[in-house]
Length: 374
Image (cartoon, rainbow, N blue to C red; front, side):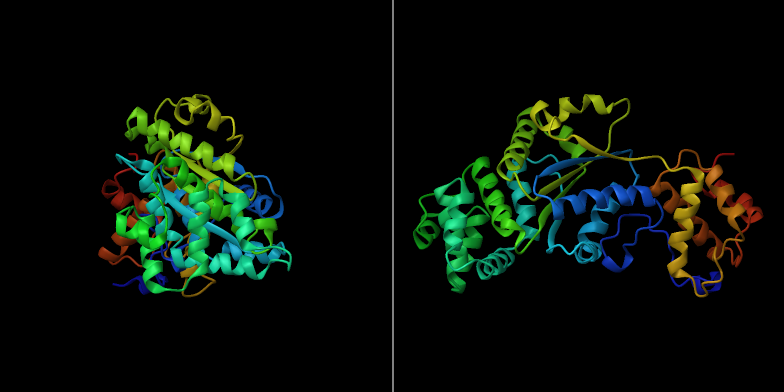
């Protein structure tokens, strides 16, 4: 028996976060989507930088939201709808158990914003300048650091492959004498503040007057893992983020995805973030536990794109009552749990050659579903 026998093209229910753009769809939760997109649009159309805290329990969809908005064309759609210039959007996981979390963060940043990207972005900015403006002057105003200023001028000035490779090695920590001599720089990126200056210079320059890019959005996922770092590393990360935010006062949007541990209240956040950063995170988007009605809508919208025939609204499931029966009996709901349970039910139906999933079938396999309540 195949999925096609269940009126489906593919299993609609993913049991883990997908990174393939074609698999990333937004289903249900229109109010949550609206809140996120309000923040994105504000960043595109207004200047002040903002920190937004995405707050919700494990499996509530925070990572999916980050993947959806960084890997699909949804941001481009919003740019076009609002007549805004393109936005840059990346997602980075908070470095776990790293001895040097800021360097780990920087490597993740460079893994998504490559040196070639940086050069091409600056070329676009250069082409958008007025006759009396110069890219060097814009770099100098935004760099806060002569070494960083000289480095960006090197990046944009030369297409020499050897030089380009030397700059790339330098960014990834190569501060050998040969590399420094080749680049004409006195020393490597040796402290957290210089990394802040590098990233803030990049963001400030490419979003200059929103001429080329309207905003830069960073989704920092699994921020709760900061408690896996020692106290010194925690302080380094929070200081790094505070400085980055302070040095990119315009066009920068930082989403912090945070899953609270048991008995952790949002009021306790200053303990984790530090007072300086927590006072900046004034905007909070709760990823709430879904109601039964919200969960049914979510399931229906996941099923819909995978139907062989659109008129088969529920696919292999007999009716809405079947969906409700499952959702009523699996305990506290979360996006992750809903996906895991319904994916397993489909797998069981294929295994047992059942082409219609009804309440009777669910009852017959309930012991195979770990979260099903007797």
